[in-house]
Length: 210
Length: 209
Image (cartoon, rainbow over all chains, first blue to last red; front, side, top):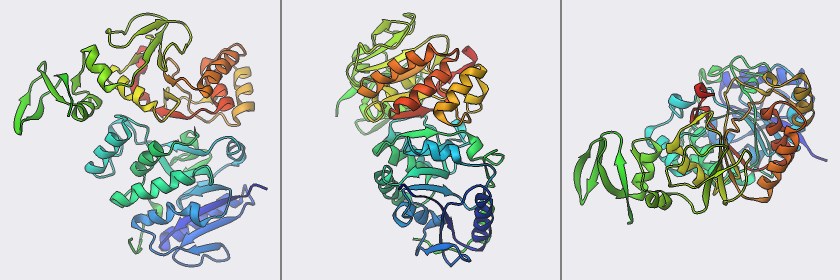
């Protein structure tokens, strides 16, 4: 039987508080198991205390496929709120490897939040002068189908140890998977399915870096 | 390292035999292929010599278009209303929209990794916004949720493969079942599941729709 579960990464007090709210919103629609990677136990939730989560806990995030033992993983940033059922997503995951939304930062704002060196190297390495920037704060994937992708994503992230979006583009280039693009309804400040309250989990962060 | 002839479109700083040389718009000069790709990707140069274009593009590329309009002699054009694999890699292009030509070589090269490369029509143009009620109903049955972007199929890059040949067959079939080409394409994509790379909508100029 195929197993499905939600996974969160929550380091620091703010992130843990946000994750708890997000999980509560998820529970209004789904009774699936939830796993949290954190620096301490979160209530009665299944928690993995993943050591050395890296800058912004990104190293922990990029290891969720190694830690969470679900066939299908629904990853949510801690500062998200689920506003509607994700049943359609579960159906689509029967057919595609990775579901996620484009970022609202495109065109002139493409990868604007990362260093210039990484930005230029990314565009050069992927051979695409103007790619779609993907928002990996909400992503749904088949763990086995995306195993190599996550491996390359970790390798790429280790080159700069900063944000993860550019590393994802480089990883996808090296290990393409079958992507079904969702709209920003699934990952946006005003998303009608998933609301993403960007930045709320980053208050009062005190994490150890890799 | 092999060099290619390029023409500057902007002021460029070029190194030749260790010396910094400023190139001005309109200057022809030879430069390394890697540098050429970089500048080409940023729209700072053009490569007009067909021989030179073939050096930065994969072999066996062609354009399929209802009208023979955009060829500069470098890339052969097949006139057809529907994509056909006369070449291993094709750009199916309808000139009713404007495609940024400087990106074409890069997209052909990207077909090394992907089977279908197509721009998103508009980030806010979703499957739930287009087509008739029947189109949307049929589409939702297949793709499960209409809150997904639609694609600009008038500028689509395809690599000849089992999946893409099937995609074109299924797209033809789905087009006959509804009015919206965009929704028909989404249904075909979902049914066939090729390796698809979405491009940002800025690759095409929506104002020329």
